[in-house]
Length: 91
Picture 1 (cartoon, rainbow, N blue to C red):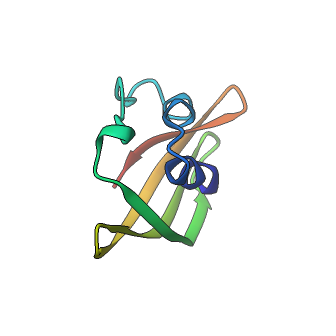
Picture 2 (picture 1 turned 90 degrees about the horizontal axis):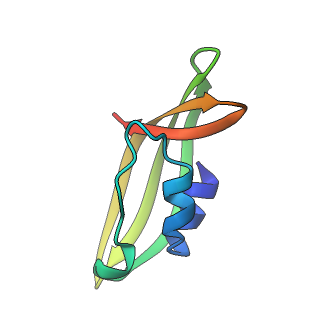
C-alpha cells in the first residue's frame, strides 16, 4: 500500500499499473492529464491478511487539488499471485 501511495505522489503510472491485478487493471490512469494533486500524507488504519492469497488495507490519504484539501478513505483489496501482491479493488 505504501509503495502504491508513493507511486501516486511521484506519478509513476507504470508502477501503479504493474501492481494492479490484471482482472481489474485499467488500460491507463492518465495521471499527468489530471489537475495537479499535492499528496499530503498516508495513514494506514488497518491491514489484514484475509486468506492464503488475499488481504485488505484500510487507509486515509490526504491531498490538495488547487487550494481545496480532500481526503480519500478506502479499504483496498489485494491478491497474491506468484508471491507478488496486486491491488484488486476498493470497497
